[in-house]
Length: 216
Image 1 (cartoon, one colour):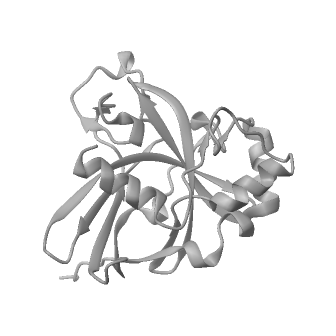
Image 2 (cartoon, rainbow, N blue to C red):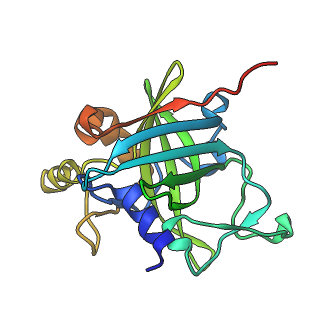
């Protein structure tokens, strides 16, 4: 695994949460609406497990004409390339692009791109992140976000033990993999609405602050 992919997996899964995948999204792509309020640049500083300071930047906007790179696409990464939209296997109309950049204590920079599309369920906001393989969407991850003024709280994945408990209780159903959820969109929306605080507890959020350029 390349350093870039390792970074994306670490950023996505974190050290204390799982990496549950969902065969179906929390909402269909064709019903998505771009969330204009979260577009822009965001900053977070944290201390890693070795005590080193790490700075992370999120740049959220719209994707350039692009196609999925099948070599790294299974992590949601993609490479820009001029293509014919009519023949593209991945439609970009309702997708948002999240560019993640991390600056480590030794000055090394790493990062990548994620495609996502937002959905709202009651008062909560989520984003479906399609995972690609050879240019096809094969599964999804679901992050949660919450805008509070100039702060953006992000939960990069639902808590693994909460997913496992819901599977054990029969509310969700697992596929071949332990944290592969096979339920349809309707079931997911019901379960997420009833269990939001269990799936995304406060201690697992990362808070980013909006970067504002000085006005002339």
